[in-house]
Length: 428
Ligand code: HOZ
Image 1 (tube, protein in one colour):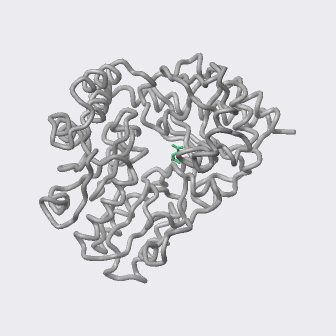
Image 2: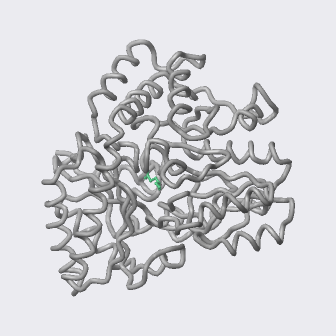
């Protein structure tokens, strides 16, 4: 029989760290990764046929669960007509129409193949539109791995303890300014230190790559105001929150409008997709309409579009799912807090909608410093304890747990049982 250990031993010889994306290597939680053979609904099976309740959901896109029939059938039908044309197809028009109908303020959208690509392109549009160079980002926010965004980055960069990457030149990072999440004053002082120079403020409207840290009341509204006053554009990176927090993403959820929005994997239902969009006047700057160049052979790929369309249509037609997911998220978070008290392990459970993170610290986590105060040794033991008990979560303190519509009450009670047993072990 195959084993994850044997596959990993082969993998490290031919893939850096044995993986194609760092966090999943599981090194920081003192493990080697499980190799996954298949997935269905809320469950994953590894190559040794062990079953797990999945709270990673491919890092967000599987909001309806794995192998969701409408999505799988749409992919199967599309595949029969060809895998890639490198030419326009009807599905990409339908996809853009649907996204513009569902997302507030979205008038035009450009499909790309990943969230990283979406962000780097949106930044280029912002610079092209304003004629300015500097970008403000927030410590612990993660916007993919384009050079300019690997400054105090969250997610895998933070997990590996290197929020600033090697290989990024001072030139590429020199126009990136870093503010503190949930701290408008830090943004104001950067804007006053660089008058007329800031092209955009880019933010994860709910930070989910330093663990989940929701915005404090007034924070996003304040960013909107500061952008309006300074002439900078506001970019919401909705790679995680788009179509997850609400059908219209964080803009709908918080009632704050961004100028440009980036999307990622969720709009592909599990296929590799991203997109960026916004007001017509901004998006008409993109080639071939305007002078901001951006291109991609796989952009608008017919199979990825078919998967994404099926998922977004289902979400549109069953929008009540969002309330249900939020209730389940709040229930799980509350139960975990109670378990923390019962077992006397200090936990902070941050939750919003179907996103959740357990931090191991006494103080509420509202920013990067707070997230970094979490006890990482405890987190590692927490991760391993859950995994041993069949619960598959992100192998990093600085990522989110994702709930899906496929999780059942039985999944939750098994999860809470595993959580209680694990927390009791953490006390020692
Ligand atoms: N670190 C990324 C999620 N925020 C991707 C992790 C992966 O796919 O391994």
